[in-house]
Length: 17
Image 1 (cartoon, one colour):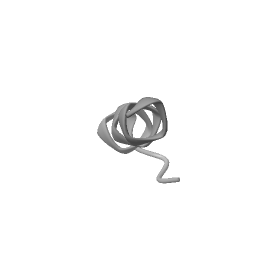
Image 2 (image 1 turned 90 degrees about the vertical axis):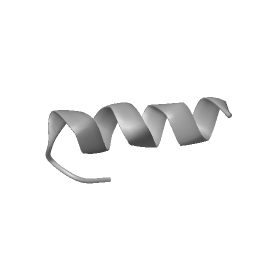
Image 3 (image 1 turned 120 degrees about the horizontal axis):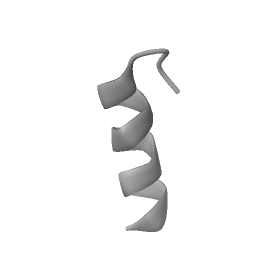
């Protein structure tokens, strides 16, 4: 999980599918 806003949003998006 990256420290960038885009990275965090992306991580959440991937986890939620």
